[in-house]
Every structure is written in C-alpha cells, then in structure tokens.
Length: 134
Image (tube, rainbow, N blue to C red; front, side, top):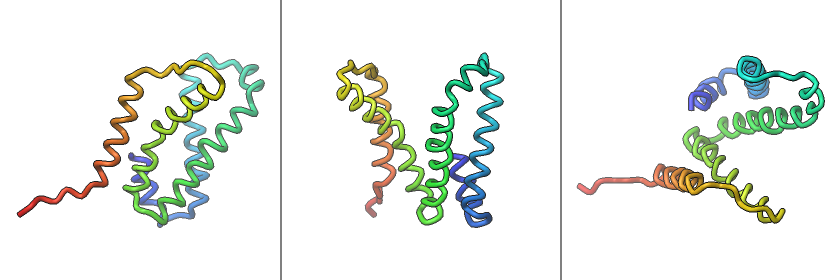
C-alpha cells in the first residue's frame, strides 16, 4: 500500500521510466541484502540459475513496476490497488489450471481458497456504493 501511495505521489514529479528503474534498483538491492542476511548464499548455484533469475527480475519486477506506474498515471490509484490485490487470486487459479493440465494433484489447502474468496469479496465490496437512506 505504501509503495502504491508513493508511486501516486511521485508519478507527477519524475519521469515514469526513471521511477520504474529506481524501483527496480531498490527492489534488487533490498532483495540482495535480505537474501545475504537470511539465506546461505551459494554463488555457484546462483550462477547456474542466472537466466531464470534475470527472467524473474525483468518480467516479474521491472516490467510489472513499469506497467503499474503507467496504469497509475492514467488511472485511479484505488482501482489500480484493487487490480493489484487480485494477484493471489490469479496465482491460485493458474496454479490449479497448471496442475490439471499436467495431471498433477491440487496441493492447495482450503485456507488458501478462503483467503482468495475473502480478497474477491473485499474487492467487490469496496466498489459498492453504500448510501444511507434519509
């Protein structure tokens, strides 16, 4: 939420691509620091997985941040926030589809389904205009 608020504030102050590059740099630096502090870093494994790591960093983070910035520039930050909140719902649905397509059993727990249902209900309720009758 704080990141969305900050993007909404700075989108009119700086160039969108510069803001996106700054976010990607901050994300990379913080991720590296956290991984060094919390994980056992094995440089040979990192170098062996460099292409998946670059792919993930570019498509998941850099392009995602850039698309978010451009959508926030031209859209309502509340609506953008709601759209971004559906990430867990789509992750669950696409994981189920992938498991079914590959003939694997679905590993999700009922609690994950409840969480996604609560996210969807919250998103729909936030769009309902509750006006009190006088």
